[in-house]
Image (tube, rainbow, N blue to C red):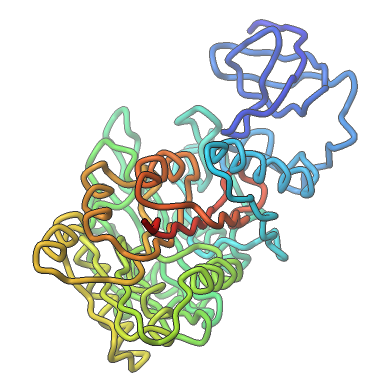
Length: 438
């Protein structure tokens, strides 16, 4: 291992310290700090800080220095929000629209309702739950995550004990031996219902029935248990090859007064408290009067489309994930919504067909994956020619790239950053684009 004295001269858009002299090691330093770093390749350890920044705080997470789940447990929250606003502002420097102050998350701990941990063997060869280290596929034991739901933390801890009691062998990617790979837990914030998904290399294991019974005995909030069989060597946790052993295979939660079905493979925002702020702002940007036809693309389980339906004439939700569409249909029924249509289709193909058929939409709401939209999608969107586009993004960098392709026809009028994930570098962004008039 090498040692070097370095100075932190800034934080990059990924939340990592920019060091001089330039080394690739991942360390958690703040601007202006000088410290000694011990490193090898991308693995780095901060040995000593000579002049701690006044912005530095003491982390409340016991494994922050080892775990790659969070980025900013050492940084004052006000500075985190400033960083996130600056990130969005720099990415959208090509537009004149002002960047609003970041909507803060009032509860910045134990906010995640979707949580997953890797299962690995500790030094005693026992099944252990944890997270990956930064820049690494090596796991570190995590007994209670500071940003994960408190109930989920308790269930994780009990599952670890059960895996050891029942001698369930963790899966080893190198030898391809073992069974258990990951544990995924989803919690209904309003309902307190819990889903547990065991991601395994095999479809069953000895003692499963008794183990599941003991889990529910300890945590009756567990309403459904699923096994997902994943034999692939990829970063994807779920394979989609699932069998439900307890319950109906889903849980329910409430958002802005509406009830939503949440299954293992379908997307649902992981910070419900902040999601209400996020979607509330999106509804405000849509400027609905009750007469508009709205298209919701990348619609997932129909969450935003259903929330918009109260103020719209009609909402069409388009999603390519069949599990999500099935959930969306159930969600519309649960909430007795009659003016929302759920469509299983590729969003680009749907918009091309709609434009060719002369269908019109006043507002398009889009919430694409982190990678953003494709050029084909953006061209189809311009062809559809809605009056307003409400673009929700979990990755402002790709959102800004997409907006650059739209500003030939649209003007950016509002940009609202939202802090959905405190202590991480991530920031959600809502951008309102209005059709230019001749």
